[in-house]
Length: 359
Image (cartoon, rainbow, N blue to C red; front, side):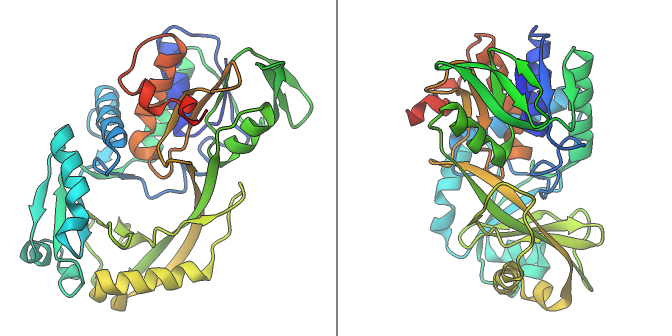
């Protein structure tokens, strides 16, 4: 079994496959370090509620899996506050929360002003507070996943860029590395984010993946929120920010199609952030300045749901893909789903998230 990609999706799949008894697992990471791209360049937000019911389920399961191994030390649970200008913008989220039992509190405009003073003059008057959300210790999670995987027998190789997934007829035959080496295998997992689409297409898959660039911006200034202030996330005109090392880490939630690479930052994103932040939290926008900005890629399937399981066309090809910004929240449980599928065990989301739904 070969797993391509050493971010949270690949590491979780490898660890849980090995613990289910599959010892002959080789994980290949293109870069010299694991988790170089999306798993290392995100905002590390654990978001337990969104409109996708499958993502909410996976978030809860990821929490359970990590709590069993790490206790609660992997998460700074200062909470997440989801905001909107009008109440109906939060209706789908409230439905998901009630259906799946996600603990939440409704906040009025007065609650927002009292709990988040930087938003007092902003546009949003409706909110849901999620006390069980917060900021993950990504380094802790990924370091331990690698250790668990290797202790269970997984071979992890970095600096091993896959040039092609090889097939024989309509079946997987192995991979060819960029240096010309070939590694034979009848099963290959694509867990390499934005790079998965091209590798899958070359092998004959019809699963469509889109890489979208998103920016993160580190702001500093006077009156920054305390470290234990909740993550703030506006859902009707998406923008979020959270405390970070005396400043805030913010994103305008931009989505621009982009080729797989380490994308450069675009000054246009700073203008978008300034506009949205000015309407969400005017005090914060006026008192802060940009110290640093960078971009990363979020990879989406055509229906914006995860694609986890066997490919519809290529036998022996499997996916843990389309996490689309949900990697830190859902990646641990997505790896479990794929691992169980690979060893023939049932899972409640196997039919919902199968790549076979794309034909």
